[in-house]
Length: 223
Image (tube, rainbow, N blue to C red; front, side, top):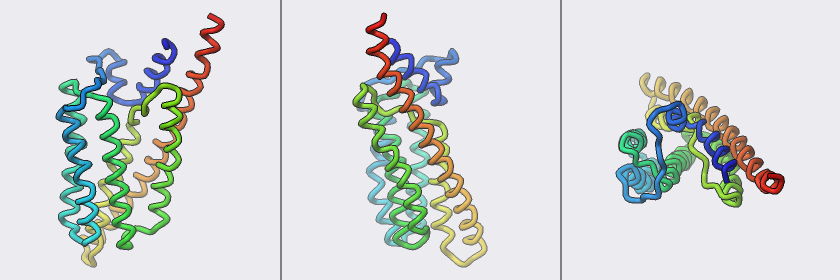
C-alpha cells in the first residue's frame, strides 16, 4: 500500500493544487463529506444542465449564455471555496468534472441540432470521453477512484465554455456577430486540442498507476 500511495501522490502533483501542497504549502485533505458549499454549487450546476439545453434548443440564446456564464462562475467559485475552507471532498471530485462534461455535451447537442457546429466537431469532442470511459472501471479494479482533474483539462473546459456562447452570439449577420463567430471558433478549436491533450495525459497517468499496482504483489513477495 505504501507504493500505491506514493504513485497516487506523484500523479496528483500534476494537479496544480496538489502541487502547491507538495511544494510545502498548507496540505489539502480530501474528505468523505457530502454536504458542503462547493458540493451544493456543483449540484446546482448539474440541475441547470437540462434547463440550459432547453434554452439552446428553443433559441433563447441570450438566456442560455447567461446560464452558461453563471455555471462558469460557480465552477470557479466552488473550487476557490473548497481550497480556501479546506472543503475538498471525494463527492466534489466527481460532481465538478461531471457538471463540466454535461454542460459541454448539452451545448454540443443543442448547437449540432441547430446547425451551429458540424456533426464531425461533436464526434471529435465526444470521442475523447468515449476513449477515457474504460479508465474508470480499470482504476476501480486496482483500488483507485478517478484521478485528479489535470490543469490542462480545466483550461480546455474554460476555452470550450468560452467559445460556445460566442458561437451562439455569432449566429447573426452583424459585424459584432461575425467577430463573435470568429473568436468562438478560435476558442472552440483551441479548447478541443487541449481537451484531447488532457485526455492523452489522463490515459498515461492511468497506465502508470495500473502498472505500479500490478508490481505491488511482486515487490511484496520479494521483500
